[in-house]
Image 1 (tube, one colour):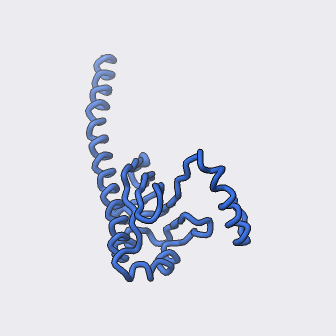
Image 2 (tube, helix red, strand yellow; image 1 turned 60 degrees about the vertical axis):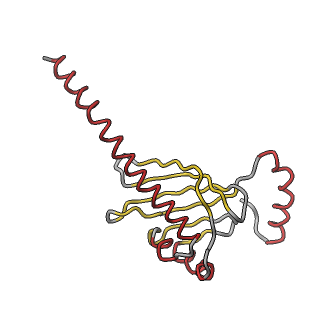
Image 3 (cartoon, helix red, strand yellow; image 1 turned 90 degrees about the vertical axis):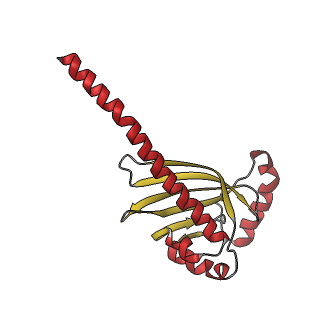
Length: 168
């Protein structure tokens, strides 16, 4: 009897795994579409979609040490850029998405190509709010190959010295 119960438990767990994996795949695909649409909205100056994808009070960390904005601050700063045909252009060439056990929080990292810069990296967190995924945090970062750091460090330190800000 014990062996039968153990066998049934193992079978039930094994049967449930593909369903959970399929659900995770579908949620990850939904998040992937949201992030791709979000980047496209910036590329096409669609402020409504871009900022509508972010949760109220979301945080955006830009590439400069001074760039830490709430969604509302970022939207005000970016408004002039969304008046043209394109605010900025970043496209993901790789993205990894992970989900919390309860399925209401996700985090990701992505490698980006840009028309204005060299390869960049984005990372962030999303939360399911009232049935919809919203970006809570986005961190846009320049990628610097380790072998060129000695060459660019003096320029970075000079910029910090001239700005009155100290690197952290």
